[in-house]
Image (cartoon, rainbow, N blue to C red; front, side):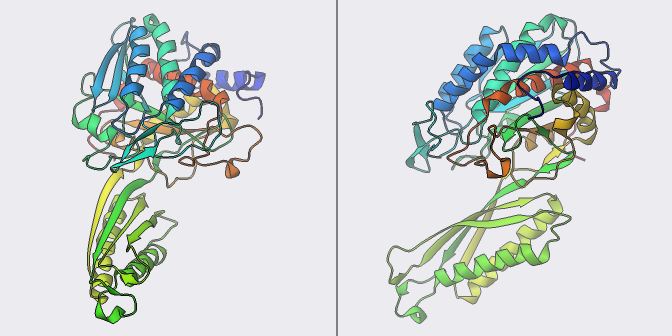
Length: 454
């Protein structure tokens, strides 16, 4: 583990000192990463307790009522200004520094769980259920949002304790429905917070967020510009003519048409998109049709996901796929309707802010455990919508258990996914230091609020 998170090593302290000296805007800061890390270690039992409580009591998107109440109670106890009911179930808290006016920075955590039956065997494993698409389903924090909330709650506690040293304002965003808009909802949590003006007063000049993922415990990874893919949900409905399975020529076979559509979509991405310039994944993941082995049904429904890193290329592929789906269906005598709904835009890490953040994160983990030029990833995050209006950086925190190869670790959304709790103080510290250093930054004017990423 190279001495990362059990205790600070001489090498890490030296690296942190060199990182601080490289940034004259805060070289004389009285707040050091090592001191913050010590505070994060001191409150680690509380952070773990918060995480385990939230893990055992998960709630789906826009249903995080108990979760929000739990988070809000803690934030009020810190003396913060707390707003609840933001985007239905979100919580926003504001910490105004006591050392005078200054910039505004936001830190974000997501709150929702997934319709997954947990299989970790943890003593605090979820047995909760919820309503999803009209059915009662098991619910679990299979993506680490429980850890995200606990780490930001810890960061809020440390930052509240240094309030009189801070010149500026910190906005803590506990966001609902990161996993996408539930059925019947027009938008997910981040887009709804922005649409309802949740970040208009005060308006942040920068926003930071993190996500636990499989990876060597305690490592941090991100990249400037396109980091995480845009995510679209694709739904295809086919209409044919029902017939006996023994007389397929007397109907219109939507099963055959579905097979042709799946092959066509796979060919579109494999043969018309250069994967070295614009990584693209187009997956048909579900197919629902028929009720009996010897009846060809009159309808079929397919759904899948499209992941892209270039807006123009994505729009072109959607247009060509829509036309291709219709043509294949017509070749079989069927009708097709294809709809595309964007769950998350491209996570676009502001280049200037990304470069500025690297030495800040290096203060926390050291140069060897920071990769600020990691390859892009095809998973998605609706943090992207904040970045369309506010310069922001999103980074990943490796959280694989000790002794486990990250490549073999259960991924996010797996029923076996778990978080190495030893990395929680690192997430707490990176939240605190990114906010502190931004408030100390001398050139916030270099980061104007914008309408969309450049």
